[in-house]
Each structure stands twice: as structure tokens, then as C-alpha cells.
Length: 268
Image: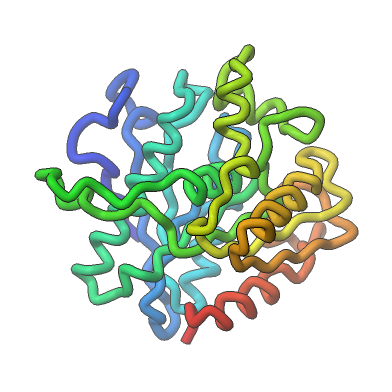
């Protein structure tokens, strides 16, 4: 496990030079037979904090199945940041891992992103707002595409629009009084298009923090755009389960996700 700075100098729009102003990527190489695939994990935490059980724990699970995993420490509303700082960090992470994959003999066409709750919102935002890179940039990382090749969304925040928005995430991302245009811009279900990457989504119907309607409206948008996806819904389970604990086990979403990844050729 090792970390590297996301930007060679100050991040765009940095508010200072403290650790919270310097996004990083932490590497978790495969601990099983390598598959050539890479997945970047965006932890949840309502854009206020980064939940470890939705970061390192996921990365170690992925590494145990032969995927080179990375955890992104992105900038947060609790440190004064607002959109688009978080999206800039997410896009840069995909460019960086794609660039490193070429150097390390991994597949630059199998760079995925994974996120829970607000991290799932960041995944959905990037899946619907990416670019092909800047060919003329002197920075080789910036020449890379920011399009992820698939997304894994765990009980995701999707919409910023009432009545199903998670208001804490919205305030930390957009401020207390966002303009209607900002709300629309960051409601990912409104921006799905035919080149949006394939997705695996899971949620519980009992989630009383982020309503299951977030997953449903994103799946409906993917279906309308004819984007491949799989979705697993479970009746019971609190918000923020992650991989679960002995006292509070998670539904079998990891089995469902691995089945989907295997079908897409991402596992050995």
C-alpha cells in the first residue's frame, strides 16, 4: 500500500496547502492472480468525511480478487470545497490510473470506479460527465480520457432534486441555497447518455437515509439510454452497510457484483 499525490503541484482551486487540500491516490495491488483490471474507490461520507469502511475495506476486497484497487482521497465540503472540486479530483484519478496502467502492463480499457452513498454520487457524476482528454497538454496524465469503463454504485446518492435527494450531501456539495441549474447539473439521472459506462447498482429498500428511489431512477435512465447495467435490491439493511459486520451483515451484494464483473471479463 502506497500513496501518491493526485496533482504534481497544487490542485486546481486549492484553498490551502494542508493535507485536506492535497488529494491522493492510495494503491492496493492484487493479492490474488492479477486480472489486468483497475478500480478506483470513492469513499462515502456525505461529501463531509471519507468513511474508511467504504474505502480501504473495499480496496482490499477488490485486491483479493485480482483487481488493482485504488482509494481516492478527494476534497470535501467540510474543508470549504464545493463542486466542481470533487469532480476534478475524480476525473484526474481516472486519468492517472489509466496512465499508470499503460506503464504497468495493465489494461487501460478496464479502469472502473466504485463508490458508496455520496461516493456513489461522485461515481454517477463522473459516468455522465467525462471527456476524452487534452491531446495538446504537456502533462501526459491530462492527455488521458476521464471516462471510466464501468461503475459500481453502492446505495448511491443520485439526484439532488426533492423529494429523494440526500440534503446533507447536497448542501456539502453545492452549498445551502443552490441554484435550480446547479441542482439539475448534479442530478445524474438527467445526464445519462448512450456512452455512459455500464453499471452495477445495489441498494436496500429499507434504507432510510438515501431512499432507494435514487437507485431506481438511475437504473431507469440507463435503461432508456440502452446502457448495460445490473441492479440488486434487497428488502432489509441499513444505510452505510459496506461489506457488513458480524453484528450487522450485509446482503450478498459482493457475490452479485463479482458475478457481473466476471461476465464482463474483468476477473480471472
